[in-house]
Picture 1 (cartoon, rainbow, N blue to C red):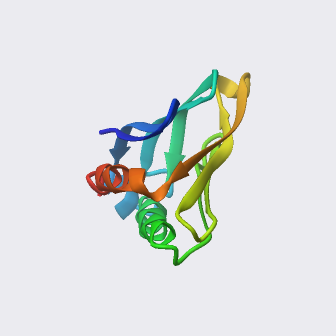
Picture 2 (picture 1 turned 90 degrees about the vertical axis):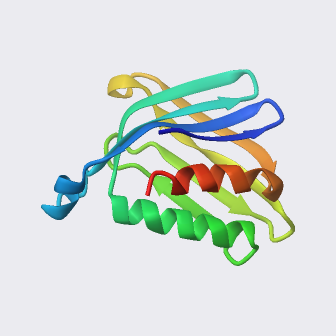
Length: 133
């Protein structure tokens, strides 16, 4: 399963999302795996082996909805494998900056990125994220 956020020539994708119900039931917080692909200007990066807790993922989606509705200022997704992080920061007027750091395989490569978006591109992204749940 994939979710894509695109604005102009910039892109953020959550790719190959997989949730292990049994790991979650056993209390293992590493119960989701996925990759992150970012295109920011002329730079791009791919974070493989990302891990996350499903309950935190569900919470992140709820918070992202609030951000788009100007009811929150910032939403953070920080995966617990290598620590790749994505921040969504709203200005309260419909503009949302996407920024963060993604780490490549074994943390040998790093991409720090930032690009602007607006709330109009989030409906399909959030719908795709919700399809993971």
